[in-house]
Amino acid sequence: MIPLFLSLGAWQLRRAEEKIALMELRRVHEQDPPMRLTGAQGDAEPLRYRRVQVEGDYDPAHQFLLDNQLQENRVGYHVLTPLQIRGAGVAVLVNRGWVPQGASRAELPDLALSQQAPHVSGRVEKFPSVGFKLEGAEIPAPGWPSLVQVADAEQLSRRLGYRVLPYQVLLDSDQRDGYVRDWHPASLDPGKNRGYALQWFSFAALVAALYVWYGFKPRPVAGA
Image (tube, rainbow, N blue to C red; front, side, top):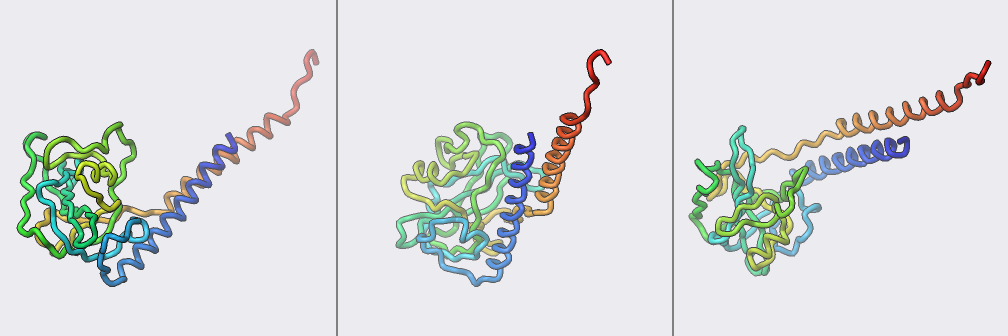
C-alpha cells in the first residue's frame, strides 16, 4: 500500500504543476494580440485560450449539437458549426453558444445563420472532457443537426467528410449568429491537488508507522 499511496500523491503533485502551467498560459495568451487562424495550427495545447480571427465559409447544413450542457441549471446544447477556413482545406468548429433543449429531445432548435462567409473572432479551447465516457458517446447521431455526447475531432471529421481541427473556437460575445455565450474558463486550483497529495502521503506515512509498530512489537512468548 505504501508505494500505491506515494504514487497517488506524486500524481496529484504533477496535476498541480500542470494547472500552474495552464494558469500561466492563460495569463500570457489573454495579453497576446489576436492571431489569424490559418488551419496550419493543428495542436490545441499551444493555442489554448488564444484570441484568434478566422475567415471562411460556414457549413450550415451540417451542424452538431453537443448534448447535456448546463446553463443556469437548465439543460441544453452547445452549437458547433463547421467553418471551412478559406484556402486551408480544413475546417474549425465554431462554438456559437448555448441553446435550451426543447419540450422533448425530438424537438431540435433552429440553427439558422444570417451570414455564410463570416469573419469570426473568438478564443481557442479544447473540446469539453467528461469524467466517464459511455461506449459510442463520440459517435454523432443520424440526421442534421446531429446530436453528439462527446466531441471527438476524428469522428466529427468522418461524419462531415472533411477534416476538422482538434479544438473549437468559442465565439466572442459581440459576434453575430451566436447564442448564450457565458464562457467561463475551467476552474484551476492547484491548491486542491496539493491537499490531495498531502492526504495520500499521510496515508503512506500511517501505513509505514503501523507496519513498524506491529512488525517489531514484542510478541508474548507462548506458555509464559
